[in-house]
Length: 382
Image 1 (cartoon, one colour):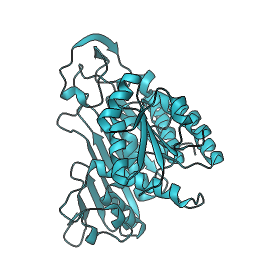
Image 2 (spheres, helix red, strand yellow):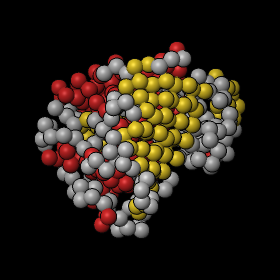
Image 3 (cartoon, helix red, strand yellow):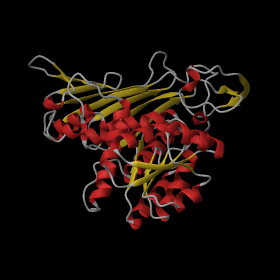
């Protein structure tokens, strides 16, 4: 049980996900703010929250400790800045901001504020990803040679699929890379301890014109809603793309991202190959980890607290065979974040994704976009 009060900004796809995970942790969610009073009231009732805020000023004036930001990307910077200046701890959905200038400012503001500031790269917190990180740190891979993988979905396959995320002015110049590719990039760098030092990207907008429906469409909900598409909208953000990568230990890699791959609902995959072994993981089968060897049979590790390293066990809450999935990653990410706040030692090393991590991902995105436009390798600025 965490003795902290939290408010949620955003009542769309992610707001309810955050709320549910926080309640499972025993965090008191005091109120929620939607795009207008009607959405705030609807979310308050649906999520059984005590208060619906009328605006952000009312929210920040309330007696709360933490603010969760789950709004469209273009609002993250201003809201995170306002929350920090109001003395609140902040947990922001990614991306942290629209530009690296904005995210760098937030990193410095967070340091000066003395508040805890995190970004929700929740995929780190699948127990088997934590196990892989532990095994890499223990030297079980040996020197890392390559890091390859993909993150693919199909929810924007058709030109009639539409959501605010497809618009550059709402989500940023990059979409598939920024929305899902950064999850993969954050994950593999966290697991390996390596940093991407250069990129060479080739991106494609499959549907340069999409159909805008009457009203807004929540993320992923287009598959189950009857949507009347009426207006042509020009699209500049990418639907898919490939990136070659160089890492700071001379390892090489590649990443494929797509939101137009039929049948792949939400599939992140990576394979990390080293001098002694290789590890492969797929988010659609998150309780299985493949371990590859040259001189002995390969292995398939099932998520089971009794088989995981002692440091990983606190993040695997159910016995083997009782699968843990997507909602549990939010709970575990927030557990790490709130435990850090409650401990009160700002000099301790965070176990959650920080604003600095969020800033690094935006720097990567800007390099990827530059590489695509210039058709060349781009070095990553430190």
